[in-house]
Image (cartoon, rainbow, N blue to C red; front, side, top):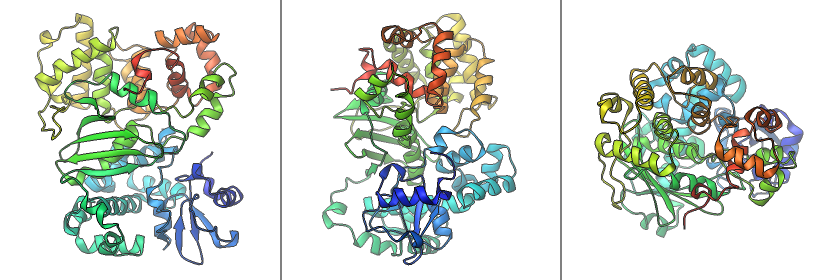
Length: 494
């Protein structure tokens, strides 16, 4: 699917008439007669084609005066897959808006992070999404408000400020305008037992995704590489601590057939939209698995792997700097050894947190605290120690920035210029931290072994040439190739 799908009226009408859930989040249907907007898979009888018009974002629908459908709840669609498969200005801006930057730093803060003027950003977002950064952030605030209204017993005043509204009046007006119901009417629609059953201090949410989703390598990878104290697998859930803009959090994520169950405990509720955004990104929930798998199936040697277990995602991270540090700790050592190195750092330099369930103890150390440690205290070879100290120093002083807004090519070039950073380390950071869907690891031992077994070329140069046909989804091909091995990263823990 290409950018600007909402302009292809024929395809949009077909998707709406067939209630095709694959296109949820790609575009929104606004109905001229009812002034309501829906997701393509809305269960109601589709309107006549002449009464439909299409928009690229919920914010654009709201700005044009349409209200969210109460049946299909278009604000809870998976996000557009475009923002995670592109690295241009609009995609980077959308990732930053999702990470709450407009609420914290305003549009000037967004512009500063991206290195463009506010006018350039406004113009490009309007051209592609039909809404500027303020309208997009407002739509996100409305969605957060609805989540809190429906999943917590919190007073409305607390919800208003937690969702990022500057006043209770703006909160009331926005909710009424977007959902055609007041905040108290939204809550009154809920079954009584749903609000009563909530655990105090814990938010229970459902994170939607596009089917299919294969949880094996996704949760298997996160659980097998979990750093003690920061991450664990417990009772069918991957749990971890989160360092967030206003405080910290603990999240538990469990795979279900049609959603990911998410249990969040936050020290500051204003961090809710950021926490959700980062968890979605870590689990690659906005991916378009049908497009990915269709492309990879065109290679006859990959097709059987895709057919056997479709919908593999790329396990990513909630903290790009943390992942880069862990990638260096994992250079040329086993998964178990990498976890041991990381656990020592966590115990010595991580910030302690209280976990009501008792298994998690710390936040992963910040680059600033790691930059202050004595290099001699690191139990690793001298060259890797130099790699580690250079990385954390540059992350701490801002010379190197790895964030959702990073330009992938620029970040790669900066990483490659650091001592001890070769193509494997750079590409694993590009794939799992920066989120580049086309990152590839032709020198990886597991990939070369899998290639040999399947009859693919196994030398890095020849495999890279063959993999050109898998673009722009080579990071997903890596998951399918890795999955041929019996390593614990490929299996959902028992």
